[in-house]
Length: 187
View (tube, rainbow, N blue to C red):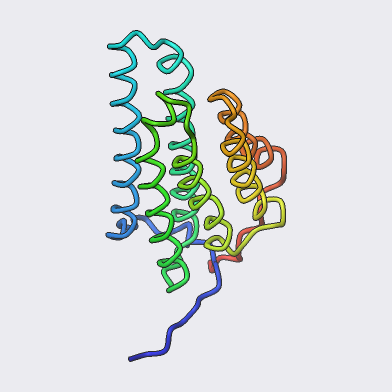
């Protein structure tokens, strides 16, 4: 068996015309489809039972949280082409986090019980920084800090709107801080 190699994070070649998604990336995407389906199913039931708070505030907040987690990792995996052991293990643990988040969406939206969603979201965000292993301090800390804030807000029983604002916090931090430098690419 060859030794396990841990590769440094390097940007993908911008001149590469087409890169096929790996089976792990496709499975990762499918797990997010499950989470969105859970949120959509809850929206359907909320509308049928005339729960407008869930329909107007809860569903968009849940969808944004799910989409934001997916979009961040998808952008990252498209920008950096690292497929070493640490990366794969991190993605597998994040998949478990996404499925935990999906399992908790109905309970969070209908009963304002964010314990399961918070645990899943925490797994996704806390593991996102070590998988990245690149960038400046602000970019490496934005997501774990948001994960801890979501965990505390969930433990304190914060309302759906507050949870949405906490999830949006890393967006603001990442937008106002300069992007991390990309590795030098060959000509």
